[in-house]
Amino acid sequence: MPQWLCNQLTRAFRKKDRRQIKLLNDCWFFYRNSAGEGTDHP
Image (cartoon, rainbow, N blue to C red; front, top):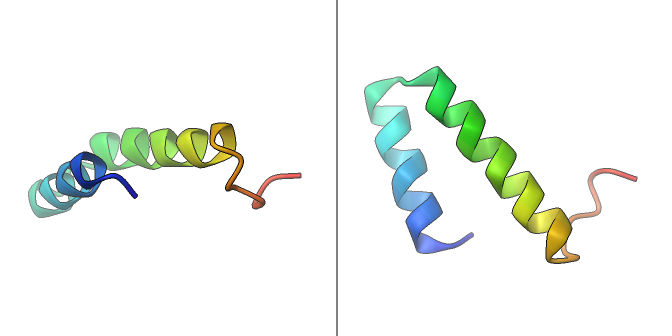
């Protein structure tokens, strides 16, 4: 996971910002899948 994304997630969890957490989570899955690393989704 890129450091910038990890920092953003940490900040969102501290603020309990559910919208931001969901957005960043979606970004992470998109990043993993586009990088060819993600095998969670067929």
